[in-house]
Image (cartoon, rainbow, N blue to C red; front, side, top):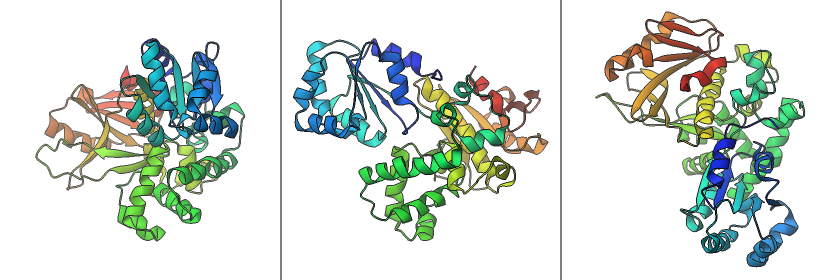
Length: 387
């Protein structure tokens, strides 16, 4: 197993909270991780198993009594009635680390947890591999290969062909989860909707435009966007609220957590296509911002990641808010630095009174530099911005 950065926090929380919940997209490695950390001391049950699921639904009390002791419940969102019984058990025993719950449907799992286990549970999200994690087992030959293959562990563990794996992933998991979360009968239209979202990566979310292209209503687009968020397929990057007396854009921007899945939806069939693809910039932005989110999520802290754009077209690709300090990052898919990359950063710094030392460009080249206008960071060293 490739070691995961979140492991330390999971172990610590299991010493303090009676219930640990681990959510994330399917195939991100949740089961492998909890078995590796807790497998020697915990019994494991998987509610994807129809017989076990039926038993747990029909008689949750008997199911838990039969599985006494420390217990890992995989895909726990399938039987939310269990949570009320778990609440009673942890209140009676008052011991840390009694249950480990995992689930791939974030919305369903967290909704039921908030109703039954508030105050008793520590919640974590496991996203696909971060670049730092992946480098422990695999060094990509170049950036384009990395973007094309994406970050799902199984691709590297089994040396699978990305195009085939992502096709199966969409059919096996995404469409099934969609049917669970929302009764969508026309999967063909939903597939078109997924591709329209991919084609808008790095752009402002326009519900009406997507609806018109797919032949669905504004409200349906909104519902389906929520499904993709709950399934950890996309994330919406919100605009930062601080306006410095300027009129701001209020719509979020759409990004994908995994560039491999994004490339598949865009019809990219080789890493060479990425070099000249019209959405290369959006793919690279998705990679960098999702890396930032992974790094912060693995520390179990809120991402606090935003973008900033005013009505006059000035924009900062990424702003991280940390203890009220705002740090701006421009993201450039070019492999050489141009002085005009600093234009929007200089504009924002003048408004915000930010320092040049707290100013960053993350780009697709290989060198780190310190310039008078700010810091230049290679994509390979993105984790260093948090040192």
